Length: 99
Image 1 (tube, rainbow, N blue to C red):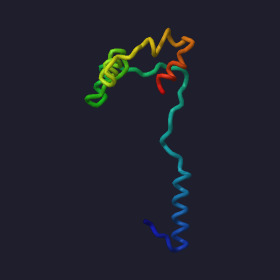
Image 2 (image 1 turned 90 degrees about the vertical axis):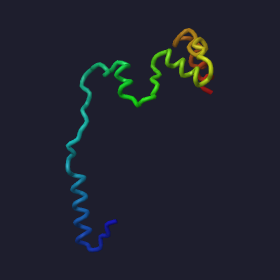
Image 3 (image 1 turned 180 degrees about the vertical axis):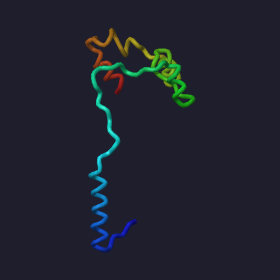
Image 4 (image 1 turned 90 degrees about the horizontal axis):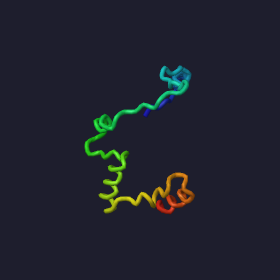
């Protein structure tokens, strides 16, 4: 811990610290200009980036296999999704499932 005892040392410390705040940073972010596609990679490349033993739950078969291992049964997709996102009871049904 720095102990500042003399007034000159305090003034010097304040001057140096304020100088750090006033110096412009050379690191800046780029603003997005216009529309561009999302960066995507194939699943095979994704598996190479993730740690060994990581299960990617993107595809339906992988999700079902995970839920079977977790709960002992595959999900009842008709209960979860009904007739699609525009089904009248979709939000209420998902809310009740998540309780």
